[in-house]
Length: 95
Image (cartoon, rainbow, N blue to C red):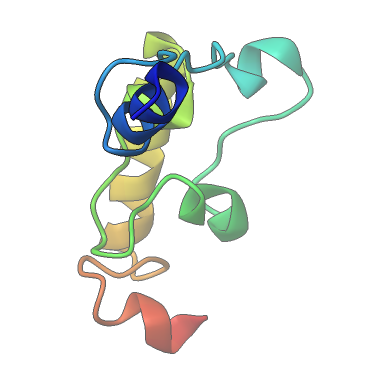
């Protein structure tokens, strides 16, 4: 086989080749000061919950540490007053 064909096969199998560089995420709450986090904004909070019902980590959401803590507490507060479900089984029913 030629060298080009071998390198293409290696890239398809995940060996060598170009590395994946994720673009840096930025906190949308720091960028837009008018955007507020509130437990009553269910559509905003749903973006930060997985299909299973768990809170997404910072590396997925791109939120800074300060705003991630506020998001987590708002989600927990919305769960307590039954605006959001605790598990993902009920999340599909509400959509």
